Picture (cartoon, rainbow over the protein chains, first blue to last red):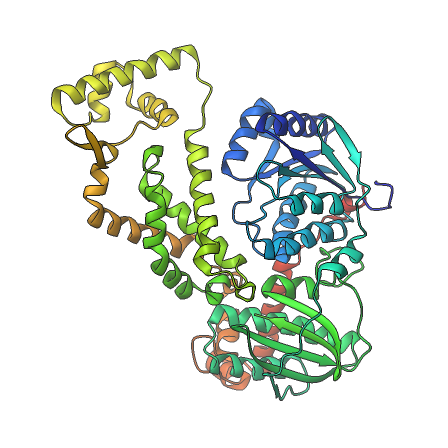
Length: 304
Length: 250
C-alpha cells in the first residue's frame, strides 16, 4: 500500500539504452517473482523478445503482452491493461508490471497521453499492483519526459529512484490540460420517449438515416444506454437529446435535469466494488465523452 | 477513416486498399532487411489501423503524414524482432556456417537457391534442424537476391516481378484483415439474442417492433424484450469485468 492510501504504485523508468532498461526492469520483475507476485511485461515485439531472453528461465512465469496496437484511445488502453492485470490478479495476490508507453510524434496529442498517465493513478488506484512505465529517453521529446515526472510519483532515472517534485494531482492535471468543450450549433433535438429503450429506437433511426455502420450503431446504442441509465438514476431524468455531425463525427448530446458532477476522471475508473461501470463502458465504445454544464443543463456529449 | 477507427470491416478494408500502395512503398525501404515483403505489408497494415484508431482529424494533421509514422514503426519493430542477434551455441554457429557454405556452393553450381532437402543432403542436417537454424539467421530467399546491371546493383528479383507478387501479397493482407482486425460485439451473443438485437435496431435490416420479432420467433413481445435485456447485460458485462475481490484488497 502506497503512502496516499491507494494499493497502486505507479512509477516510471526513463532509460538511455536497452542495457539500462534491462538492468532496471529485470531485477524489478525478478524480485517480485521471488516474493510470489505476478509479473507482466508490456512492450512492442522486439522489446518483448529482449525481455524474454534477459529473464531466462524466469520468463516462463511472466505474462508478455504486445502493446504495439494498444495505445489508440486512453479509455481503450486502460481497458486493455485492466483486462491483463485482472487476469493476472486471479492467479497472484499482487503483481508487478513493466509497461512501455507508446507516445506518437504529433505534439497535438501529447497532452492526451499525459492525461492517460495521470488518470492511470486513479483508474487503477485500487489494484495491488506496482507498475513501472518505461520511456526511452533517446528520441522522446522533452515535453513528454516532463509529463512523466508530472504523472508518476516516483521516477527511476540513472541509478536512483527519485520522488518527483513535479508530480501533480491527477484531477488537477486533467482539468489543466482538458480544453473546455465548444458549443456545437449544428445539432438538432430528437424525441427520446420515456426510457432507454425508446431512446435506443429513436437513435437507431437517426443512425440508419446517417448510414452509420452496424458496428458503430451498436456501439453508440450501448453507450447511450449507459448514459441514459445514469441520467435517470442520478441526474433527475433526460431533459433533451440532440444529435448531428461535428468534425466529421456523429455526436449525441444528452442533457439531464440534475446538478451534474465535476469529476475529470469520470468513466476512466476501472470497475471495482462501490462504483458504477456505466461510464467506463460508454467510454470504451466511443471516441470521446465530455461532461459539462451548458445553458440547457448538465450535458453529456458523446462523440462516435 | 472514422468508421475504420471503430472497427467497421468494410471501412477497414477500404482504408487498407487506399493506402496499401503507400505501405508497399514504405516496405521497399526495408528490402535489405531480410524480412519477407508479405510480413512487412501485414505489419504495415497493423500500423495503419493503429493510426486510424488514434487519428484525430480535428488536430489538422494530414492522415498519411500521421499514419506513416505508425506504419514505419510497425515495420521497424518487426525487422528489429526478426533480425535481432540471437545467442547461439558454438555448435549452432558451426552448423550455420556449414549451411552458408552449402548454399553458396549450390548457388554457384546451379544458379538457383537450394531446396531444404538439397541443403539437408549436402550438410547432413535434418530438415527441421535446418529450418530452426535458418530462422535464427533468416537467410534471404531468391526473390530478394540483388540483380545487377554491369557492376551496379539495381533491384531485387522480387522488385522485377513486383506487380503479380504485390497483387497477391496485397490480397493476402486484405484476407488476413478480415480475420484479425474486425471487432464484432455481437459475437458475444447467442443466435437468438443476436436476432432480437439486430431486428429491433435495424442492424443490416429494417427495424422491427418487439411484437413483430416475437411473432417471428414464436415468443411474446415481453419475452423478446427480456431476451434483449439479457443481451445488453451480457455485452455490458463483457466490457466491465472487475478485479477479483481477494486480489484487490490484498
